[in-house]
Length: 297
Image 1 (cartoon, rainbow, N blue to C red):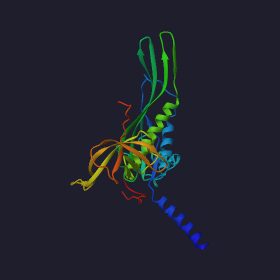
Image 2: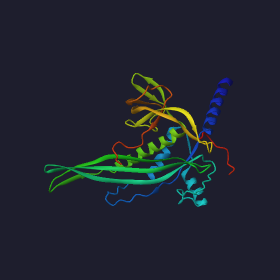
Image 3: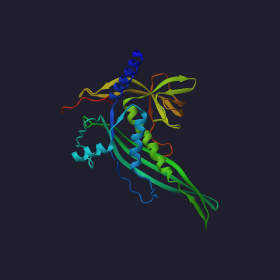
Image 4: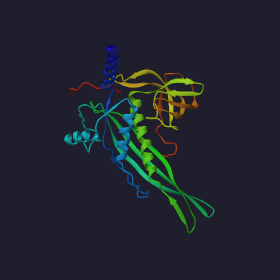
């Protein structure tokens, strides 16, 4: 009985220690910058994206998420809420390792008409895009900056000379936000805990992340990393040599793992290789510091 209680206490303590070592991430309010009167404004709340991103980060299980209301209070006190994008911004948020912020650059629905004879088919395309930055909250250094766009087709209809019937599904824009939130979480996750090939069986590639950041249809490039590259003047690490061995596409996911198929192969795939998300949508053209909590990017 005593041994049983000891084992439970040991497992509980070990779990707490593991949680304490996880990086703490804060998601700030994203600035809205888009303005295009050609598009139909859909009744979706831009705040959904920040909430979805926080949810995805929690589901990943490799981060602790800082309460957004508390973050906004800290930013107000420092006068930073409206000036996070300034080059000289000094961010000092106690208890946070990484700050995620940026701008919503596109949130729109556009109706397109395709004419064949006397009939016209109308499709409604929903777009959502962000410019996202990941900042080291201790040094203020921007570690990653990317543009992410998702395009979802939801509405459709038929029109003739005197008749038109078009249905617009408002959930399409919400789904586009969800896709971007998932890719944003993947961007942060792979920066700290890389997506890796953990097994290969026949033509199936197994990855160490599940449906928290990966979805069926996602594309990734598989990379072989070489030696580290150091800046001779500053001594800073600039990354490592990288050789792209090919591309893969996710075919199934569960809570912990994803399975992918090879779509392009320029070298041998082996266990341990790094995979990086291809963020472009195929349908789109378009001083004294506290001790760091968790791993460094």
